Length: 528
Image (cartoon, rainbow, N blue to C red; front, side, top):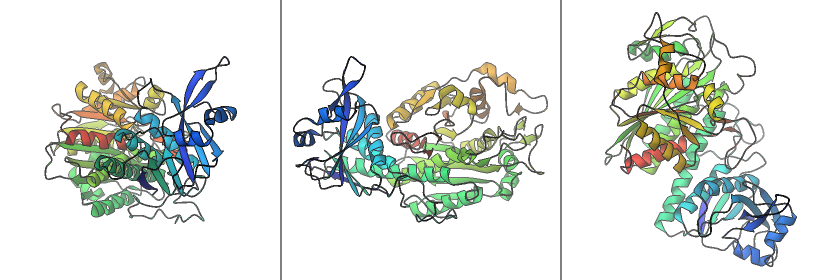
């Protein structure tokens, strides 16, 4: 993992391989282009360029647009041989700071561009502000990620390294060796708040990387059993209590959803409970993650072209797993249980069929009309079991519906809830964490379409509003008096396009930071 240091050095005097400065959009020209404006923190570098850095960047075509990267050889007076100017987008009003997410994305873009560099000094506009220091550190560390486990010749073992904790594994960027060290300039290395912010950024980045690694692991190397083994290994390392229910225990316990979804695969299902407790905790959270390690659609087979990325259907479980470990590493004063509902959805002679009726852990019966609507079945069992521990709030995370991608695109997850105030709090928390989300309704009229003539409920309703219907289905398995939120991360969980900001191609670790921030707010008494 990329090392992180805080430095009071100026951008000109820091001994590094590259120094990163910020550039914002300035005045608009007649042709619509904008002139670049040098951001705070780069004064010494601009001085070394004779005060003409903005003019040079404009000549090179830089505009200050978000994520834009321009490299220049450093002049005399700057100890680093390379200057990297990264776009910040629109400059804030005079006297106002840049937003944390602006800084995160800029730092991430710069870190990706510095692949192969030993040390990068990030002279972005932080001016000693703790929140800004945290944002730059977090963005740079997140941007330095790459998944290399299965590449030959780069140290990858190619066997999935089953059962081992991968949270601190060395990683390499797509274009070369990782940026070995991030030095955040304008920070205060001896200040307690700054040191705490740096430590939190490191933990968050490592746990987001854990989730990304899991999502990126091919399904022949990650199944319910090996996923559970990774949870057990991490629990041992970080002091978590981990319980695993195998297929026999699930059948005996009446977990009809998990057993039903997993019965078509030679890799049987698991339900994993990770528990973190703090002696001074006053509140408790239960986090539930959908963990379909591969989703073929089952008998309701997915069409060609929709199977290739279905290793990512366990992104919710990965996020929950990483968030619980992060909470333990940060020592948050909150009790958290994480539930990983793990199964592989495959077609075979033993697979569930459209028309089958399952008896869930709650005792309710479900008519399965579509075996590709399997995530809600495993979540329903886990939600019921998690509720038995009487948490103060429940949050489930899942790549649940393609309808959510149609509604919100590839970068925003949806939030549904049985409590409007809690839904708002979760949405605000996601914004604080830097993750795009949107609150959605749960229209009661959609529930009727899930009425079944042979069971208590069917697992699908009408096609229109399918993402909302999925939320209504899950609501049936949540106690009315417990605040609950459903995060459908189907869009942002897996990036099939080019990297941007601190977001890589492939698994993104979506919702990890939101869940950690939610745990922090709960510990601080801000929720409930």
